[in-house]
Image (tube, rainbow, N blue to C red; front, top):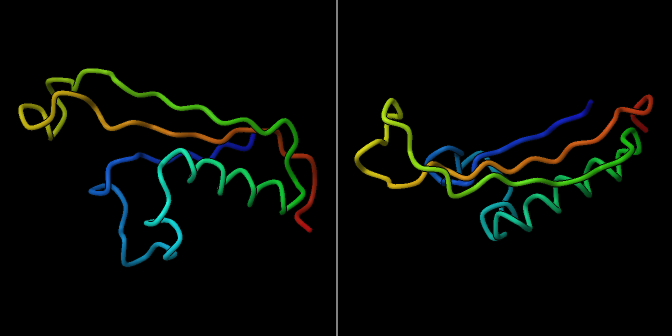
Length: 85
């Protein structure tokens, strides 16, 4: 299984370490970018994207009391199919 996940809240990624395009994209477009990178690498099959959003912020979360909802989680998954080109 080849899985790449990322959270959607800007606090959880470092804009100074991201490519310029990443900060310009909507989170759903970011899933597409990651999926395209995996497709272009040629070593994954059955690529699919998923997102989990809208869950209440758990009481033990460091942002509990500040945020009503947890950060969304976005993922691109697929099966590794061989060596990278």
